[in-house]
Length: 82
Image (cartoon, rainbow, N blue to C red; front, side, top):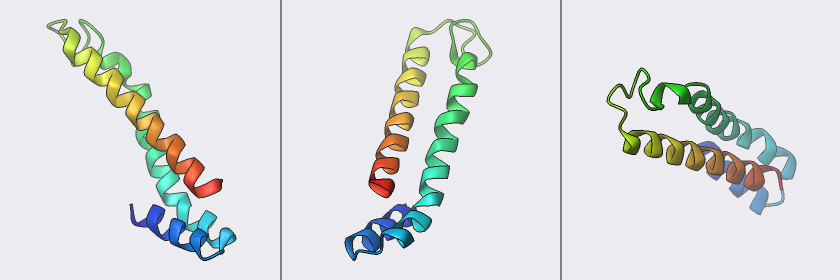
């Protein structure tokens, strides 16, 4: 969060090169969270390791969390690099 805020402040004060460097940690962390969730998404599928009872709400919650993580990754990328 601090990385994103400092990048936005740097961009506001016309330090575009500095904002890119300051925003990299926020972009890496949000991308890492999204990619990690995508890799382990099959664990939450019906009947799998994290969902042996085949509960559809666990599967839907996992998909929604994945969508939110990818949206955060995209928004951070746009805010830092646009």
